[in-house]
Structures are given as structure tokens and as C-alpha cells.
Image (cartoon, rainbow, N blue to C red; front, top):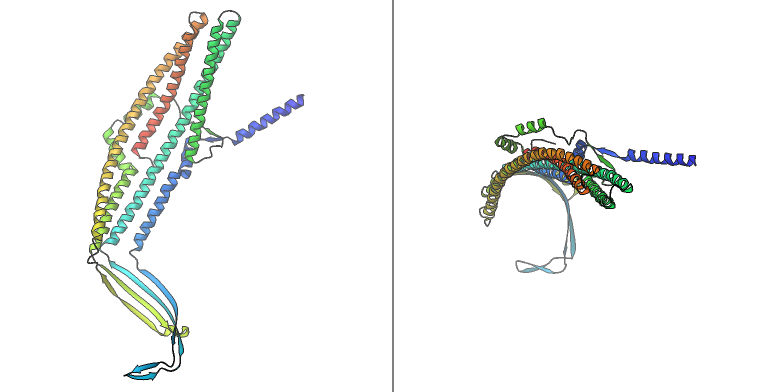
Length: 450
């Protein structure tokens, strides 16, 4: 029997060691790095950069000559009927017997073309492609900032729910101890059975609250793992020693001093925000589009040169050479108002880009303002919840002592205990709301690059 028990203990220890080996700790910095590597939005933004850069390469290529080569073989066959007269000066002449003529032609050539002038369309295309590429890079940078902020918010939400689980578990532990005391007091006749039933009902509610809090924690962790691109079925422990739920007064004061000048913060955000810089580049691209559209009113000039060989026989194909070169002027005098349509469309695109740039500035101003208001509110909430927690803790102690002495009722104790749980939960929420609000200000400023 003793051997069987030892074997069972060994198996349990081995299973526990295996579970610990499979558990992975996920810090906030690791979560950010993994998200930047695996997040779908980040990958799509990077693909857009590569596509835009290919447009820049094509714009470079428009300044280079085009070169083409050709080779061909042609075989022709002619058949003629015989003994049919052919009239020459009104006199019938017999064409002769029927026959068939077969001929072959071999040819090869090389040609080059270089565009000298196209109404500045080439320059406009280059400017538009360059601005589009820079806009794609800035959009990607803002996407990375957005994903990092989402990861930080999700990570802090996991830590918040973990603390709420601990609050509910601690409350359940207290109420179970209280139930044990009440049950023992009832057994010796000091308390009524009604108090036992009330406390049992409260313990059942506490157990339900623990189950709900644990489910919220598990779902928050699953959302975080999905956001950063990890398998939600793997076992991860979300923990980071650099994040504290306690916020010191010195830290709050330094944060307030850092963000007290809202006008300066707005200017910093406009100068740093990648989405505003992207809108600026999109405006530049739309202005270049007008130049491209207007080029249709001007002629184009190109130079060309060609070299070719041709012969009925492959062996003599290099003996018959042809070399040509020259200039070509092309001017579309009337194109059924197509150029006018393109110009009007390009001008409308420019006006829309100007509106988008103004709106981007407005959005930045309101986002910075709201982020600062949220930070100030979170700071005040944190101060209030600290005071409320101290008061609720003392109130519960007094209620418990009065109930144990028989001077208070169980209902008073339950109310005091519920107030304590709410105060603890409010403290946890206020702590992580402040941390999240502070990171939201950094996200609104857009000064960090990842």
C-alpha cells in the first residue's frame, strides 16, 4: 500500500513538472514584439509599402529608354491555275501550266525608344509615386502604433481581470471562514439557524462571482493571444514585473507636469503623428496627379532607333541589314474632352486630399484633448478609490467585531463586506484605467516608433 502511494505521488509530481514545463510566461515587451511580427494588420501594411515601392521603381524606369527585340519566320504559298488566258493589250495569252510557289522569310531586329518630353507627365508620375510610397510607410507606422496600443490595452485588461479574480477569491475565503464561525456558533446555540442559511447563500453568490471573474480573465487572455497571433489553446502566464498596480503620487505629479501644456502637445502630435504625415503625402500625390493630367494638352517627343536583318534563306539572313533612326512628335489635338475629364478628376482628388488633411488635424486635436481628459479623470478616480478602500476596510472590521460581540446583525456585516469588495474592485479598475489612460496619451501623441 505504501509503495502504491509513493508511486501515485511520483506520478502527480511528474505531471506537475510537465505542466510547468509547458507553461510559458508572456511579458508585455514579448507581446508587443510578437504582435508586430504576426499581426495581420501589420503584415498588410507592409505589403502596401512593397507595392508602393514598386511604383517608385516604375517611375524611375520611365526615365530610361525602352529596348525590344524580335525574330520571326514567315512561310507563304501561292497557287496559280494553268491553261487560262491572260489578256495582254487585248490579246489572249495562255498563262501556261498550273503551279505552286513557296517562299520563306527570316527576320530579326532590335529597336530602342527614348521619351524626350511628354508634357511633364513623367515628372508628375515620379512625384506621385514617391509621395504614395512615403504615405504607405507612414500608414504602416501608425498601424504599428495602433497594434502596440491595442496589445498594451489588452495586456493590462488581462492583468486587471486577474486582480479581480484574486479579489473575489479573497472575498470567498473570508465568507467561508465566516460561515464556519457561524455554523460553530449555531451548533453551541449562540446563533440562529437563519444566520447559517444567509451565510450559505452569500457563499454561493461568492462562488458564482469567482466563476464569472475567472471566465472574464480567461476570455481576456484569449483575446490577447488572438490579437498578437498566438495559439489560444497554448498555456501562457501573463505576467510582467515592470507593471505595478500601485501608482505613486510622485509619478502622478510628474505626469501632470509633463502634459500640462495642451497647445504644445497638439503641435507635437501634428509634427509626429504618422497618419497626419501620411495625409500630407497624399496631398502631395494629388497635386502631382494634376500635373500628370495636364500633360495631355502638350505634345510628346521621342527618339527611336532600330536595326534589323531579313532574308529568304536562314544562311544569308545577316547579309541584308536595315538601320533606321529618327525623332517622332505626337500631339493629340482633340481627344473628345478626355484630358479635361482627367484634369477635373485630379483637381477634385486634390480638394478632397486638402479636406482630409484638415480633418486629420482636427482628429489629432480632439484625440489629444480626450486622452488628457481621460488621464485626469483616471487620476482623480484613483485618489477617490484609495480613500474609499481605506474606509470600506475599516467599516468591515467594525461590522465584523460588532457581529462577533452580538452588537450587530449579519446583514450589517454582509453590507460592509459587499462594500469592501466593491471598493477593492474599484481600486483595481482605477489603477489599470490610469495606466491605460497614460499609454493612450502616448498613443495620441504618436511620438514612439516601433
